Length: 246
Image (tube, rainbow, N blue to C red; front, side, top):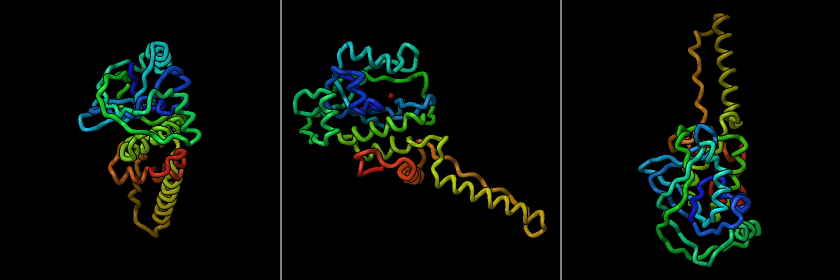
């Protein structure tokens, strides 16, 4: 069975631990869906006609699937198994055990190979009960940074990473330092204005609107500012030098 990973299982070290028999096949693209951080604070895909999800495709056996069911919380209703058509860019260099490839990435000895594009039917874990956009869990940030680093090395496009993944890596409860400084300056300005009014030296303050905390899917200019905050606060994922599950 083919399995399409789109979140923390993009980190091959984790994937190899969860699914020791898995075989890496190549990059996959799921069209008509959008990547999100849902209300539970973890990754999900939701239907969206004009979007797409990039991930990695693995061959797994029945034992691997049971392990994935447990880690994804299928019995608890967190995710459900679905089968979807995925465009696979299959690596033409023979079967690659996930554990072997994870070591090659760690040693920086992976050089890729030629690809053949085919369509496959792949297992995708989807959280149909939790589809509202949410804020990423703090412990999930580091896992996704590792995942992005491996996925980038294995073919995920910089455009996709910049548009969908990177903006979601800022937890709301850890506002970037620059924004904290802006808010502190605004509070000081508001306090000074009120004091001047009390002393008869100024006009009645109208208040200063707070800037919204960056969300996972804002406009292009806001996404660019969010990515700068991500880099300044968390740094770039290891080896992800050209760009900013469950």
